[in-house]
Image 1 (cartoon, helix red, strand yellow):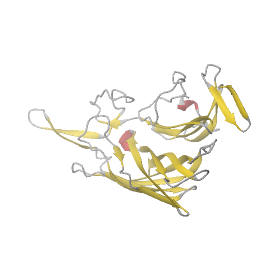
Image 2 (cartoon, rainbow, N blue to C red; image 1 turned 90 degrees about the horizontal axis):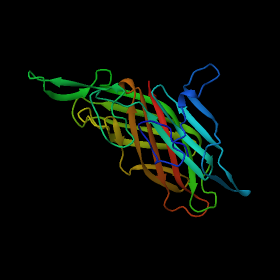
Image 3 (cartoon, rainbow, N blue to C red; image 1 turned 90 degrees about the vertical axis):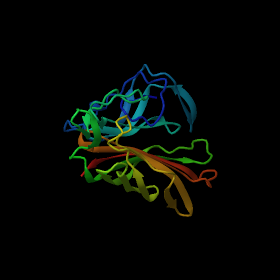
Image 4 (cartoon, rainbow, N blue to C red; image 1 turned 30 degrees about the horizontal axis):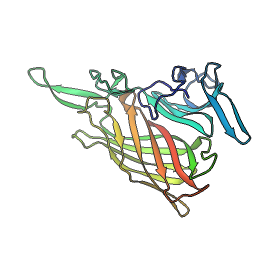
Length: 273
C-alpha cells in the first residue's frame, strides 16, 4: 500500500511506501485542489497481490483506489485495493514554534507555520510560550468524515470506505497552561450522532512535535439500535494559525458476532469557520 508523505500518520509503513502519491496533483474540473477526490492510481511498479473472495481470485497489484479530501493545509482519506486492504491516513503542515526541532518518527524536523509566540526576560531568556493572538480564544471547525465498518467474523469483513457524514469541533485555546481543549460531534450516516467529549490540547509551552495535539480517553460512545460502540478519538491542529484540524475515531462493539458490525473506523478533517 502507498504511504502519502506528511506529519500525522495513522498507520505504519508498507512495501509500496517508496511509490509517492502527490496529493497536490488531485484537481477539480476548475483546477482547484481542495475538496473530495476519488479515483485510481495505476503503477506497474506496485509490489503485491490483490486477493478477492467473490469471485475467489488472486491477481497482481497494479492499481490502488483513493478517496481523499484536500483542505488548505492538510489532507485525509484512505487508500485501498479492495475491501480486505485499506489504509486510512491524515497528513498536514505542522504548526507550533518555528524554532522547534524533534527526532520523533514521522514528523518533520521543523514546523511549517508558527502557532505560538514567546516571552523573554531582560536577559533574552525565554520565560513563557503562548498561543499566537490569531490562535488564542475559541474556534469552530467544520468538515467531513471518511469511514468504513468491520464485521465480527466474516470472510470479507470490511465495507468499502465512503464519505460518512460531517464533523463539527469546538476548540478553546487558553492563555493559561494546560487549559486548552477540544470537543464536538460527528453526524455519521452509519451510526448517527457520535459525541466527541472534551479532550485536552497539548499547549503552547510544549515545543516538541505534539503541540496542538489532543487525544480523548476511551469515552466516545455511539449506538445503533441495541448495539453500543465505545472507543476514542484524536485530533491534530495544523496549518497557519491552526486553520485546519485532522483526526480519527475508532469505535468497537464488543458484543458483535458473525456478520454484525464490530468496528467503526474513520478519519476526518475540518477547517476553521
